[in-house]
Length: 86
Image 1 (cartoon, rainbow, N blue to C red):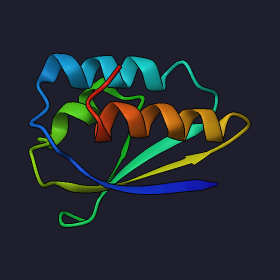
Image 2: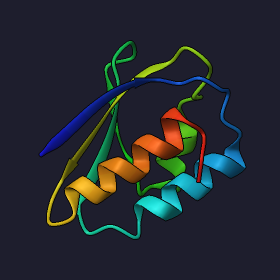
Image 3: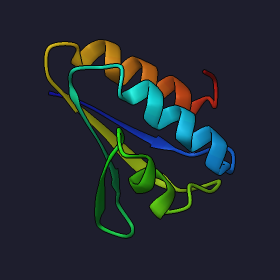
C-alpha cells in the first residue's frame, strides 16, 4: 500500500475531475482519496464520487493505492491532483 498526502493548489473543474477518474480507471490497484476535514473516503475511479466533494484550493487529501501497480498509480494520481498536470 502506498500513501501520499497533498494539498490541492488549484480549484478543480468537473471536466478535470472526470479525466482524473478516467485515468484512475486505467490502473488495477484500488485508489482511494480521503478528505481529512470531511472524514470521507472516495473511490478515485468513480466519476460521481469524484464530483461529490469540491476540490478547491487548500483542500487537504490523502491518496491511497493498493494493488499490483500501486506505485505507478500513486505517482500518476499525485501528479494529476497535486500539480494539476495530466
